[in-house]
Image (cartoon, rainbow, N blue to C red; front, side, top):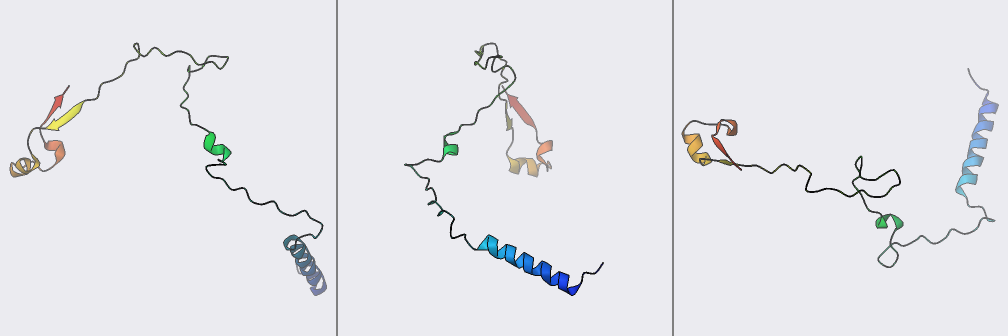
Length: 107
């Protein structure tokens, strides 16, 4: 489908007029307000927000916080693993990877 040259020129003139109208400011328009400066004396509203971890059962059906029984909560203890021999001795004895090293669990 080809458009006539006259119609193509008409479309280009319309696009140019619309783009000029969008770029040039309207003399009747009100002036732009000064940009807001955020700082210590004027903090941004989002800087006052806090992050909260929420899980199922933390709040009741009315939005009130439920008390947590910390004594009844099962918390696993951290286990620390240590290597019995230094790396230099392990390499001298033929052990080449950490998975092959003998380890001891301290509780």
